Image: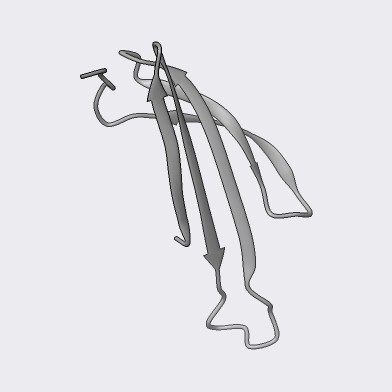
Length: 71
């Protein structure tokens, strides 16, 4: 993971992560830069978002391990 970001404000939160995925068994494959962003409502256990590796993209649903809370 090369970037972790996000925010928690006004009843909404966002998650931003960036990864570099490598394939050690395939020396000819180049590393892939993978980005993920999701948003949700505080107090809920799911967030929805999008992901991309620069070529492919799609949507995702994340289930949180614990509820978010404003402090």
